[in-house]
Length: 461
Image 1 (cartoon, rainbow, N blue to C red):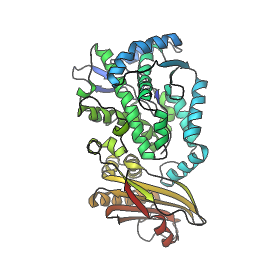
Image 2: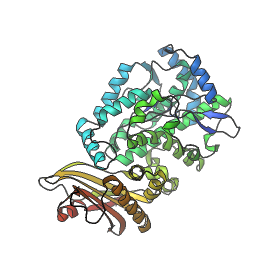
Image 3: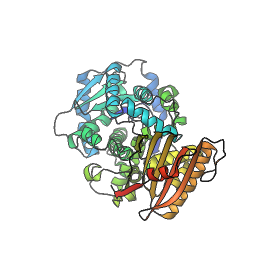
Image 4: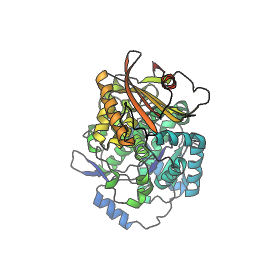
């Protein structure tokens, strides 16, 4: 959805995640769009610790943060596979400083006009309300969730003043990985290179945040067990995290804004941390030396993050590009692609079935959509390519059912005269590839116009 990338760590997301082979109950914490905050040896221990902490914990000094940072640096370097090449900077930040940083990042990554265009497009897809204040929601989410963040522009990691002392090291460990990443690859430059490609940006975020979460967890579990922990040797985290659910959270107040957000925003905020962690654990479990997921190793799509075999095989997605500009009198409001993850969300939300959404989105190989406004109103054209005919057929069938649920229309046939919109879901051949073209248009839109608007060119990314 292109909601930006702030390298941060946030509040408790899920309490108990997995059990290691020594039968020690482990806990970790994850966040939306911004990482995880802390973990205890058990949920009971966490509750006990929370009860003992004062409502307003004493703020750590900059010197304390620096000392803690230097103490955990060797272990985090080992877990992340990156050694520091220059001194690292750490400082406190109050809520005003965080707000300024968040607003600056939103202005850079999601200016108001882009936010309105993204909202209009996802509203047409039925994924968000058309009244959504996207920037306002993201600002509120980040203010609610973030307790630490790394600022590549100043090469400084910041910890919010209200973080309790018992949680400082976990916050520092996560953000320390981002600081080390930035010494190896310019995070700002990486973001700028791909920021206009929604799915590719989300895949890169999964590599960046999954790496930081993996190293943080491995360091944390080592501290808890009193020894060295190899996270790649634990049971598959994907199975452990399959049922991660906001409803399981006990502290409702700490995630009130997150829980109120549309599903697609929740998924996009959570995926880099949870999906990225699972991706990296699986990738490093199959390879020696823990190669960093950057440079040539950076995943190019959420498909590669979701399906490790596609990543290992170098199965890059197909780039789908619309070949005709908007005709005179028409404005292209926004154009991008959903990728496999958001295609899943689209299907699951409208069909009310996560498993069906996951299955029907499998086999995705590339897509592009465009929203246009003209004399007849809003026109949405969505073109996708698939690995095989059977998978394209399955998606087309699921998409028809999703649009029937969305509009109550008979998709691909004559709609009731009183219907304001028509939707067509067509199986097509695109340059010899299995394709699906979806058109969500005002009744009476010219077929010749739609044919022109749906023309695409395909190439490998």
